[in-house]
Image (cartoon, rainbow, N blue to C red; front, side, top):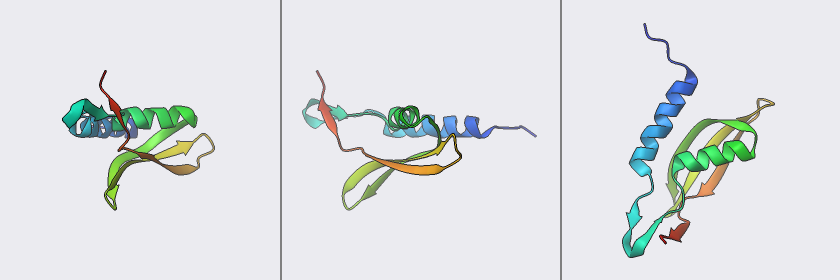
Length: 90
């Protein structure tokens, strides 16, 4: 039986999600501001926490990233970051 750690499973999931939803070029030279993986890593760094899960969600026509993190105190928090922010490709 192969032992797989939670970190390995999470890393594989984030990588697969990034490949599926990564920075895609859009009409007019626009690109997605950040990939799911980049946002998840940034949220974890800013909160001195580790990522429990990360996914892209759409509600009422709005897209956002939902990042669940666990702080050093063991508290699980859900952080939502708009995924529709765009920046011009320079």
